[in-house]
Length: 200
Image (tube, rainbow, N blue to C red; front, side, top):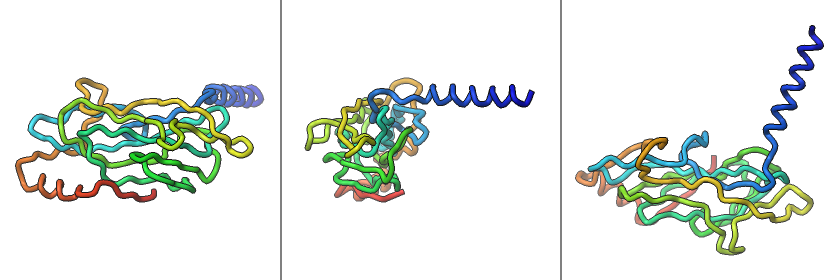
């Protein structure tokens, strides 16, 4: 009986490993949350023209693993960029998502891993989106795998992060700020220069 149970556990573990098999090509995706549950934000409530949201950049490695990546993020005109935090497992960070970023992990990655998350403010109810775009340097978005010399390999653009989505499933903005009071003036003064960074 004990041997039968042990065999069942081993088979279950092998099945789980088979289900976790990585795709031939990896993905770079944008999400609204750290659990990768949402790829869109609900519409800002009428009368409130500033919504605070978060953008998470996640990668799923390809079958050769993930050591580094190069890409950029396309921001729509109705988004104000605020502070960005990077995964503490990154050993190298060159550039930023707007201008094009090159990153390297401190070890090879074989599962979903996040690169950065950024606070953003949406200043209209226009339906727009944030998307992964090519790094201006190489002209592509790409991974560097875990093979000898960490060669570059193509990757795919995964989910796009939609803003002011008209229907569920979508994540409600964290806060919504009207433009009538002093709060709006205070908030606007924070963004004379956009950006900033931190490590997590």
